[in-house]
Image 1 (spheres, one colour):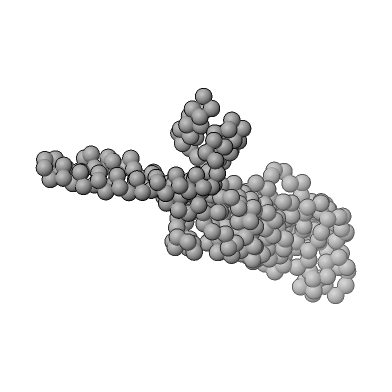
Image 2 (tube, one colour):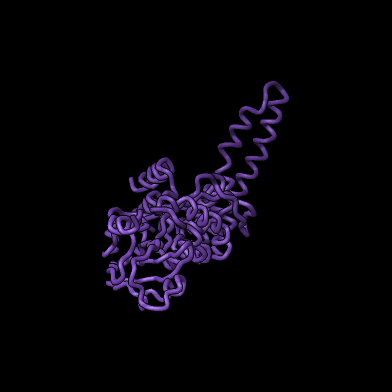
Length: 343
């Protein structure tokens, strides 16, 4: 009966993995009731690693190439199985293949705004997204910490965990980059490099290597976006801090006027409106007087109306719109004003 069982057994002569499909990180060779022959051939292709596991314990690891299995090529397995000479009978062992290819274009991003600290604004809420690439660096560590005895382990199985690691270290990246919050959108390369540095150790602990991180977009909260737009607008026309305050006052005039117009009814409302109007008129006169004096001392007024200057300014505004800093409506309004000067 034992002889018949031996005859019915199937023996493995060739062990290999053809990677039928993308995105597989770990794959267990199907053993079923089969056993490995002495002298069997193990083929490991480029960007692959094969690992022999004996009763849950990682034994021998093979890199790319063709390997003849014997006690000489399986020293750890030989020790674990107490082979004191060349094994002549077939043996059983779990064999796992791992892909070491780069896993490209993996996506990360904030599903909800993430609160971070900023030296200028205190706590702010940030949205950001981009992609990253990694590869499997240590198959033994990855097997023991991640994939285990599963028949197949894919990048999709791991994606949620890795995205969580990226977001977990987002605040650390902002802090270590030293980039002010309002400047993040203009320094995406530096921010991405800081995020890679902050997250690499967490990838290493899983047997992975984080290769690249890219930042595709950083979204500022609406209130801070308005501040950034104001700074950019003042930067374009080259005004100083005093003129920036004048610019802010001019921006607020329409809203103040609305408030005065709807401040109340009857004598009391008219009195409030009259008082606010007088104060507003005095403030406006003083502000505009200072602004005109500063502009007159700084440069001749006609220079700002030269066609070449206006065209250059339009190009700058178009670049800001393409980057999403100016909205279509803001760009259209500024463009209309400048074209009137050309007309």
